Length: 195
Image (cartoon, rainbow, N blue to C red):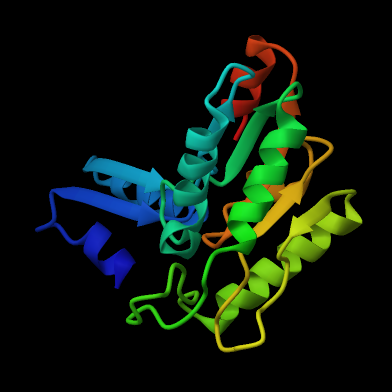
């Protein structure tokens, strides 16, 4: 369907939101016909916390950014870049907040985080978290499905020793936060712009 729409002579402008691979194909096909194209492709939005941050506010913002909508948002703050001077305190507060999230039926008043959209998404996230661990990451909390099963997945925080880990720049579209530490503002900017 996508290819038919992009190549149809009656379609003058194409706007696409999705994966980088699919966006590349849309751009290629539209480019052959010199059509205008707007692409919003997969990414890993950074959430940067400097040493002078109000940690309580930053934790609340980080939790809302990655665990709101179960991380199934194109603008989910899925990479935490935190100054090493406040990293331990910030992560302790963040882990406590993540562990307090009530998972359940999205229609229930008490639910704070619902399910993932598909079983395949759960399997992808499980595989990426497992790969991160084999590459040297540490799961600080979460990293598995809760007892209620289905397509639910726990709020997960993965401490990454390097920006070279696969999980750091692979969009998971789920409740998984990759954590990196920095020392200088220039390093934070470089990490934020890396994905």
